[in-house]
Length: 316
Image 1 (cartoon, rainbow, N blue to C red):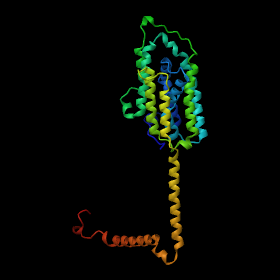
Image 2: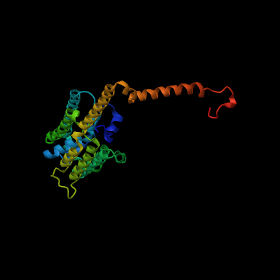
Image 3: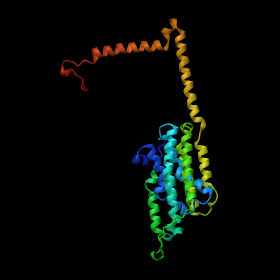
Image 4: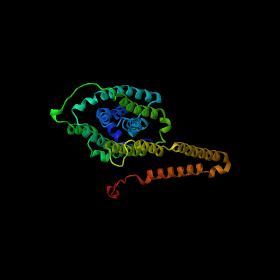
């Protein structure tokens, strides 16, 4: 059940190759595409609930789980070391972006850019839900770039002052840290989760949770901004996607089949005597001998080419 053709992970795997590189690409895309700065500008990392939602859905999520469970090889120790190595790169980059993102306030209209932040989360949700839909949507980086152009202030009002602001650094690092913690938990529990988690179901539920997060960021009427709807949706999805009895049921069925086969073989051996001549093994042996004799006779008589060309069958 854990082997999934996840559309995001599959597309990236064809480009980068290798499980560790694939995981780095999946978890680093929000930093490269500018999604983290967009979340900061949109005010989507203000409360602890916002941080957990962004960390699980943006930096963790179904793509990260699919890569770890279905693509990464090696022991748990090796997988954990790979994730910690990624954390040593992602956390400083997130802190650097958060420190300088507010310098764009003198150049961009944050009220306008706020809308594009919600749109880019909706695009990620659509791409996660369906690879076919994702083919017709622009990439998150393209949406962010379009939002930057559309949000530019009047040149006469522009004022770019490059001054680091450490106010948003803790929240940004915490959001990435939640994604790292999610990846570590999946790697540590991989032997138990692999075969017991329906990744496709978890992927679809994650896309719904991302959609709820996007509606909350956009401030759609009827969607409460402070309620953790996306987090609750993700929790319900994880509950339905996890089936702890599936793997044990398969093992039990295989054990029963093996035991029945051993019992049948033992019964056939212990029968012995004249009954052995009428056993299934004896019957199959006689059938095999008859087949060999028929094959030999056919080879000797029927399959010899006739010496006269006119006497040959048309298909020969």
